[in-house]
Length: 399
Image (cartoon, rainbow, N blue to C red):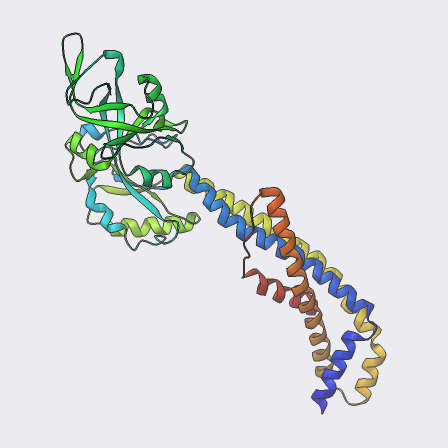
């Protein structure tokens, strides 16, 4: 009987002529809407910015240690990473790729590919024969990259690529824009990659003939390179089963990338002289940006909730003062202080829950519109924000 009366008083307190209750709901609603908007924007901005930073290329390398000796023909500067003066001082066994399975972060978004670098002579081929006479101005030394070019493109989605139809059965290659301009070649032409033998007034090249399937333009060192299949370059350079490094893209923030690097280092203990290196300008720049966004979002949310809590506290105090006569009547009928506190707390929690649920929906709509108009992206719902906003709203109302 007492519990039935309690719920009747609770329902009446919420429904009968209560402008203060409406004001409390509106205050909580505003706070919940702002918190929902900022938290959903942060959750989705984190995912999208992590994806955007992937456009800058691999963020982790597996390569021979700088102190390890190696094959001179493979010793070239790390291509593709501006500001990184490290050099590949040798080659390593291709079986290192077998140790990458099971690494933390090797799920969605994880990508890796082995790469071999060698400096080779590149010459324009004007005939299909194996031995071709070449003019001096049609030859150049270039860094030749042996890799799965499709995998490299997935690791570097910002690369611009001009492609033409490939001839069935032909060995194909991709040439950097600067090298293509220097040799005056375009997609559909052929080049000879391999050793150079001097001749009388001319040069005679032996090696492999490749059909140019595309021209690559990145604005970086790749513009001076030639890309062929890994097996072709291994054969040309006499480095069968060897690679210069492994390029990797590990998704996540700095801590997640560093944790994956630690696991990789553990898995590669059987390969002496090999180290796991972060591409620092990508890993740590993305971490700083995401940390800044996180603290700005959380600081704004906390500041707004503090302001709203002051408004709600004043409103709830006004509600208690307005009901002094009701409190006196209930105490005269035998209601103890604990029951009265429970009644007001349940009333405040209900107002907070209503304001939180409505405010969450409103904030989610605002976040969708802001993401569409400001960032031109569609927002994905961050589900953990719903219980957080609702619980915070209830605590705000009863606090």
